[in-house]
Image (tube, rainbow, N blue to C red):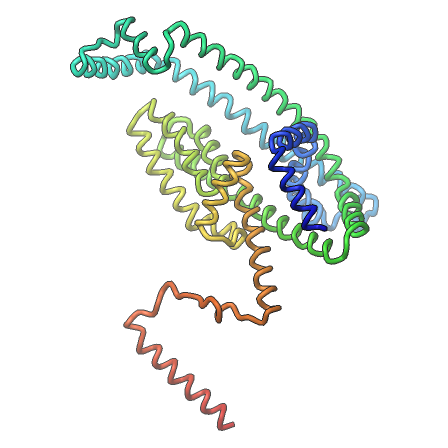
Amino acid sequence: MIVILFTVIVIFFFIHIKDVLSALNSVFTVIAPILYGLVIAYLLNYPYKAFYNHAFKKMGTKHKWLKNLKKPLSLVLSYIIIIGVITFLVSTLIPELSSSASMLVDNIPVYEEAIKSASDSVVEFVKGMTGYNLYELATYSNMISLITGNDTTEFVKNLLTNYVPSAVSTVVGVGHGLYNWGVGIIISIYLLSSKERLIRQFKLAIIAYTPEKFYNRLFKVGDVFNNKCGKFIVGKIIDSSIIGVMCFIGLSIFRFHYPLLISVIIGVFNMIPFFGPIIGAVPTTLLLLLINPMEALGFLVFIIVLQQFDGNILGPKILGETVGISGFWIMVSVIVGGGLFGVPGMLLGVPIFAAIYTLVEEGVERRLQKKEIAANDVAPLVEEDPPKAKGLKDLQIIEKASELINKKGKNK
């Protein structure tokens, strides 16, 4: 009956997939503030626990009334730190952005001259090859008609029709996102302040309405996901913060333009595994390219060295064996997660896949043990680095020692 029910649900899902996705989108829109609150509470739980379990561990041992202040004080300090960091970044980035915009506006004549020089070269090349003068209005209109199938007026009309509503919807989306995050912060305060009671209620409800085998497995899966995702996110935040600070120090020493703005961009995009450093380096390199091509080239060399240090030394030291999957699976999880859920999917794809990988690996080992099958018997482990020829003498000595030990054991 369970198999039949599951099959019917799957068939219904694929037949009415558009209606199902539309319904899920409507549900997500309604509960978005709650989900945002869960995310904020989950992230702030780590500084909250650091204050509650470590900084204020001995608080209230002498004076009992101080014990009641541990939770609210830990909660307030956690939000103060996060809000302070965000305020600092915004207050420092806005002047940097304003300075960048002013410099770009001041350099517009230079950019226009460079563009005009490049366009003159292109026009002369096309005129020499085809005889057409691209600066003539008739030729320009013919090119637009050839590319888009419309004349210039229709082209402009389509441009306004398509992009103006898109700009309006973008503004509305930003406003809706700010509302969701604002309400989410309020919800996160309630979640953090009463998390013990909520977790206990959730566990009791699961235990009451599900069989023992199911809820034991469910709690095991939850622990694995929490362990992988939590450690990975916290480790990535620490790692990216250090990389951002090092980037700022390096750019300041070598006197690059906009060191703070570029360092924040590099640090934020470094949160994304594998592709993050590349994504962060592209806009920052283009920004410096507008100012000085040689400076952009020097920055590119600097950022490659910095990312090599992060990938080979700093990252493994901080994250350790948190992920536990190969580079191939990291790349696959980032691509799939980003394709399905955008930037959040690129960030969370790796720890979620690592958790699934761990659960599948444990399941395989458990089933092989039940069948009394040794993994090396059915699928021998292939040595990637076989012994070199110069080590044969050492291997012969080890084999001889093993024979003597075994012989001595038999004599006893």
